[in-house]
Image (cartoon, rainbow, N blue to C red):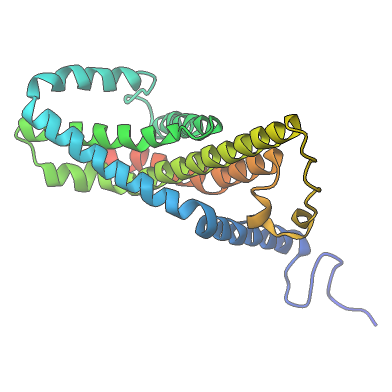
Length: 250
């Protein structure tokens, strides 16, 4: 008996070619949520506290030392010299996205150095810059709440969330690499002392994504990279679009 359905359709009218990617994306973000709860969340909290501390330190310091504001502001402007504010909103948004994505990638990559937790410097510096901007605005007699509500908050919610998430990835990576370096050193030390090597651990082959994330260097790097692509880059893109298209008109 003939039917209306083509080989690419199901009775609900959906195509496997459209449902499979959606199912894959859902699975990826479900696993990312699992990784967030079991690995990244506690580092995110640390990063948020450091961001707040950086803001307070920056604001108080420049509030009592206005003579240092100009030098600090010039340094910040030089660091953003590749961003052309006079371009089109799209060019501005893409430039901001590239600049912020590069900075976040560097913060995550700093986590490859074991136990130093260098990525924590990223939220500290971002908080300090925010404190500087608020201090400059206050000294110039401008409306500080308006600055925060119109020029910082709309895109900052997404951008700072991305900064904190990238920092949590870097901190997680730094601790994991440190633990592996320590385990390798203990294993090598045991072999030098004539102790037999421990039997291979085969349980990792049966573990799910969150537990497997601490198994191999390649798996660890891939999981961090995937988290960066799934969470950090979309947040930075949204922030850049808001800052390029909406913030200038506020």
